[in-house]
Image (tube, rainbow, N blue to C red):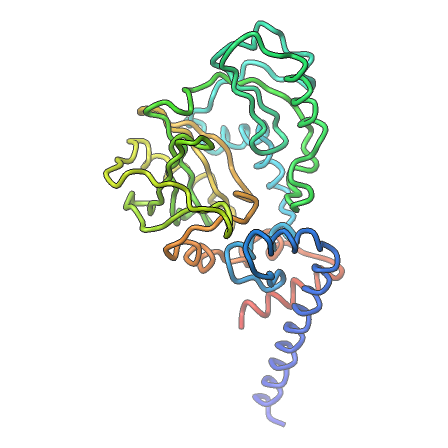
Amino acid sequence: MSTTGRDDIRRKVRSIAAATAILLGNILVYMRYPGRILKFYRRLGYLPNVCDPKSKNEKFLWRKTFDRNPMYRILADKLAVREFIMMRCPELAMSEIVWIGSSPQQIPESLLQPGIVVKTNNGCDRNIFITQVPVDRVRFNKQIAQWLARPYGVTAGEWAYRRIQPSVFIEKMIALPSGREFFDLCFHVLMGKCLLATVDKDVKQESERIAVFDPHGNRLTAHFKDNAKSKPCKELPEDFQLPATFGDAVRYAEEIARDFDYVRVDFMSHGNRLYFCECTIFPMGGYSIISGGADERIAAAWDLQNSWFMQSRQTGIRGIYAALYRYRLSE
């Protein structure tokens, strides 16, 4: 048999082995994480191919299942990520922290005044905006204590929050979220290249409005949804003008996320000032949908071969899967 013939046989054997590994891998993942699979199906309406993901949402589920990049814990920690940002972009502003502790009972009453936000570092949406006094300390302390004691997103597979040392901290409010010149800017960045951005006004309020842009500030015909079954978010008016900080935010986002296969980098914009907000590893739990071909663009540009899992040495069954999946991606 010629060398060419033997090479063809080897390629076919490897291809069959890779396909078999993906099939068996999916079976094992479905058996080990049935709740995670069911949640994906309920939110998005189809069963995921976890071990050979194609869609953006499948790739988030793949990340939850396989990619244990140790940097994700730093990015997910609302306090630790600040040190990372200060090293990477020392000139980038952040909101001022006025107090850090380990228990809500330690918080001085004198600090609980309008104009501050109380947060915990170990989750998402764990914020209390102080808008009036006096604060109901019994209710307040109970809520903060629950957040500190309960890791965020464990059942959903958002493992990066699991080993964060929980803390409670107080920030000075930059501006009221409903303020006329206050916006949330979120940038989807893959290996240091911003693919698209969302601009959000009055986030998580009845008056919330959102729009999608490319990194050059051109508005895209796209709608944002929390998941397949939710209604599209209401949109910003057609004549909406981007804040002056947008261009700087793109540059900062690309620098912050230059080493990651995918990270969403979020900022707060108030007037002409830009503030770092957070880095998001599993935005909206990995279930959000952006229409108009935006999700397809993210999925096509998101090369899992750049992930920590594929770039690092894996052992055991994970090592076998990584080797075969690496071959599958190269076919």
